[in-house]
Length: 295
Ligand SMILES: NC(=O)c1ccc[n+]([C@@H]2O[C@H](COP(=O)([O-])OP(=O)(O)OC[C@H]3O[C@@H](n4cnc5c(N)ncnc54)[C@H](O)[C@@H]3O)[C@@H](O)[C@H]2O)c1
Image 1 (cartoon, rainbow, N blue to C red):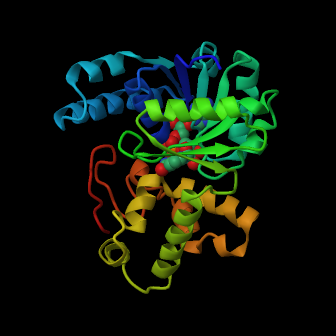
Image 2: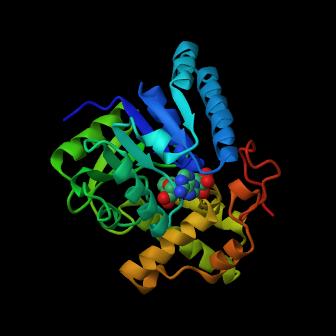
């Protein structure tokens, strides 16, 4: 099993930039790529801010943070990012067509030994891998948001994933500071399946007028000991991402995952969560505010 030295991350949105941060802190040469130059610029400044915060909190030493930051390169095309990578982690939006497009391209560009991983929250890695000539070397690496803080990494074994690929993904995840669970592929894995169900139910309650969003969040935090309420969480995740997951679970697992009409309506209105400045709650400064402000 060849060692992993360089990791390319495709997509520099909420997840891609966090994965790049963790990979660089793990000591890997890290190459981050996005279609949009603005997304790359935002990623660069946020990674720097988050590394500085980690230094302030005493979690990382200043020299380690600086070295990690220097390990990150920014690329303007998938080819430039992935050509020299030993592992590519795809973090583009949760749509099967986008994943398939990227994996088809990666399969052509990358060395035959390169492992291709998807950060999909719910989609079939087997289906994504099927467009490549290296399904054995494809795996799911499902990180959590915010990646630099969240401990868990779900590693998804697709139908054809071989033992070496799985072992490498586990080793890389651990070096990135994560606790790993390995699961056999199933829609939504462990966490997205349960989380989508809770979050969807919360939207049905809101739409039925049972309680305010703030009270539903309060009830789950104080009564069920959840660290965040379902609406705080969906605003962090992105309502569009949550809707895509629910649509996929609905299609693959049945009626109980039908997306709540209110969630669909919010997405149509452009209320996507923190990233757009408004989701269930409003965020006057989306990039920097820590606490949701109930509307
Ligand atoms: N948001 C979460 O909490 C969360 C948690 C775990 C997993 N995920 C998964 O991670 C993936 C990414 O989600 P996100 O929340 O980071 O999305 P996002 O919308 O914040 O970022 C996606 C990025 O991909 C870029 N992009 C789109 N098409 C591209 C292409 N062809 N090539 C290169 N870049 C491209 C976009 O410009 C954008 O910057 C999804 O599969 C999602 O399900 C999300």
